[in-house]
Image (cartoon, rainbow, N blue to C red; front, side, top):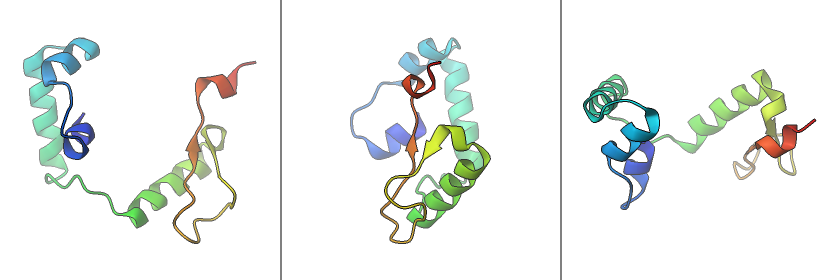
Length: 90
């Protein structure tokens, strides 16, 4: 929710997200404020940090990630694709 607000000019309000999440709007507001305070209001993630986390998640949970063309992030342009539920049908 915070990421959408950070990156987009048009987004749903906290009342909508609280209904989707099954909690009160007041609780949603408190959770959002607490999270932002824990992050020091720093919502921007560098490309290097993004790749560090996705690489780690890819190693921990390879069944959810597949790499595009190369297996390495040598140029910084190859990002793992998150696999959808259709990829896990038995």
